[in-house]
Length: 368
Ligand code: NAD
Image (cartoon, rainbow, N blue to C red):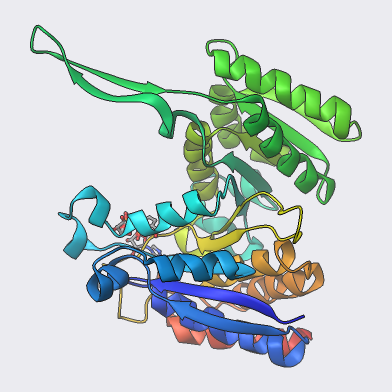
């Protein structure tokens, strides 16, 4: 059956990295029988410029109807002073909220050729392959009450509420155990059950799901502060880390930097399976932003966007062998010495965005 992908390229380097991703999608359509139709729409500043909103209802409807959304990046200095509801990022937040994308998957993989780009010693990061599963729609970023209040004495009080329910914890735990089953089978669940009630609930519910549904997996509970420390001390002890929205925000950025560059890292955000259609709402995006400092110069690294498509092949379309092929092609190109500006080393020639894309297509054709 023909699959539908909606491309929301966005702003800055978004359209540049998505152009290379499009060439990769076309390669899979031509050479691997990947039956797909691509649609395009606007998001972020591009949508604000055309329609006055960061994403239109029509684009939202297309996102809901698509089998997967590929997102580039949004934002830029020209919109920094906009009121909150007219900020480009609101387009992405609306997509996450209305598609109910509660599970954010961020792999942190260290490619052998880039071991030197990490701030940690090569022996600590070489062969690193971690999957961080962050709860994305609950917790302290959304809990009520929240706000800033003026007090009688003229000072102010600010409140955020950390809130999790049984079902919110159980569904993200299932995502983590399902992923672990395809990997080394080890889940670390990170919380602060020593000082937070939500941490106690989190620990108990993850334990319940482990015992009742995934007894074959190995579960370790770890305090989030210790997890942050262990990621630097001995990151290779981890396979899958599952954690809440706030800790996940911080731990996934920390893990990302173990691998060297923002331009290399993909992500997936998944929702709950529709019991009628079997479809899982899904949005794939590089973790980097719109990089206005390098936009339009051919300097952007397209690998994060291309690896996001590899995740799309694996998680939305069940094409694990194709995803492996694409990931191996990226590793091959790095081994050959191709480097965009963000990962350049002394003595190497710098590749442009499109030269990197072309090298990946050539590596795919060699490997297929
Ligand atoms: P950024 O990720 O855009 O850039 C940070 C630095 O990394 C810059 O020096 C940039 O040149 C470099 N960089 C990023 N991606 C790269 C790539 N693929 N290849 C080579 N170099 C790359 O973060 P920022 O500068 O803090 O934010 C710029 C804009 O992007 C802001 O408007 C911000 O709000 C927005 N933003 C959007 C998203 C998103 O769309 N998901 C995420 C983060 C930031």
